[in-house]
Image 1 (tube, helix red, strand yellow):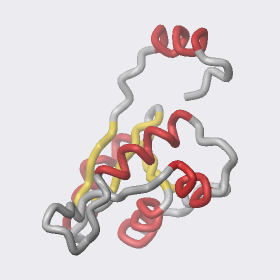
Image 2 (spheres, helix red, strand yellow):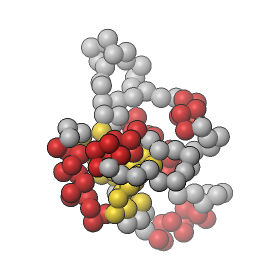
Image 3 (spheres, helix red, strand yellow):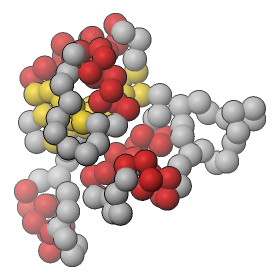
Amino acid sequence: VHDNLSTSPHYNPRTLQMQTSQILKLIQSPKLTPASEQWWHLKSHYYDTVLFFKTGKFYELYHMDADVGVKVCDFNYMKGRDAHAGFPEGGYGNVSRQFLRAGYKIARVEQTETPSMLAERKKRTKKGGK
């Protein structure tokens, strides 16, 4: 981030600098959903951390984080174009311990949008995306 190369004294190895064009190429999509934009924004600041991204009653892991979940917890990839895996919210304690024991940093990203907030956002946006 902030254009610091890995040789710079100001380099932060926890971060990843990515342009929108790089993200689009990476996930091979002409558009990012709002949820994908949020995930990539967070991932760019916590690249060395596995993100448990809350979706409904499940925690989802995307892209390289899904690969880690398959390796550490024997998760199965979900159907879709991009690497994607997950687990029910009730398994958070056990799954997080497995990741931590394997030496990974984790972060839990919770939903804070209420149904009324979702309805309002859908009114404001064209596609009403997540």
